[in-house]
Image (cartoon, rainbow, N blue to C red; front, side, top):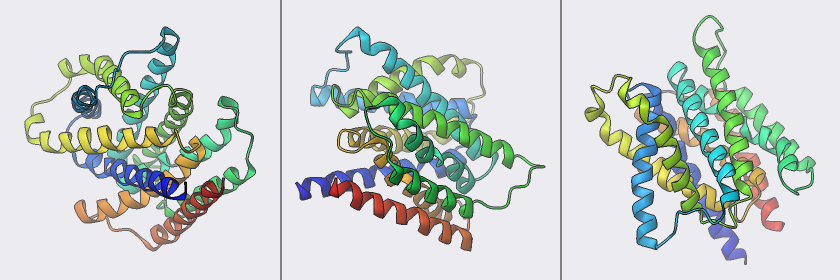
Length: 286
């Protein structure tokens, strides 16, 4: 059982690293945000659909009653991606990711309202530590430029992501995580399809390699692993462990975008990583 728990933690950690690549890719790709999100969804949908065919997973709904929940979670996922990438474009990778990573706080507070999980003061305490870490990590805000808008978009993105994960939690035992992700990216790519005919996509060919990375590595693989982890961890646990994403994202941005982290980044990052370690140990005992 301990080996299985360790394997589940490792897979959740891998999902965290893969998803964290979204920050640098979202900032670097030179296309309108809705176009990036459509390409991300469409590319992920193709790869995931092929994978489901290979593994003989059925992506059909098992019950019509599941349709509203799957649709709503897909809409929230699309809204989360759109607002998150606007946050990245308006500010920087560090600020965009960190403002979005208030979602563990929102998740810990909202989870008892969505599931049979009892209110757990430990989750709130850990979430507060994460919030303090994020506050320390964040640079000084200049409200005369676009940073304020970036923060606001990041907070909206966080709320959408928390709600999406909580709504999806009730289906992780009925559906494979890859199937759920396939269903969602198909829905998002269908809904956003009209923007491909209304926005400028002249340079899409030069951005294709980065779009494929975003669609395959970050989305298809990373998010499928994260959804699959909800079978073994509470949403709050998975969210708090996933709080290592800003650290990974900032490190990636340092190497690929030359965004240099400050001393506050290391201090705040240490607080966030401490909560990841504590929650990993606590969930193991549980």
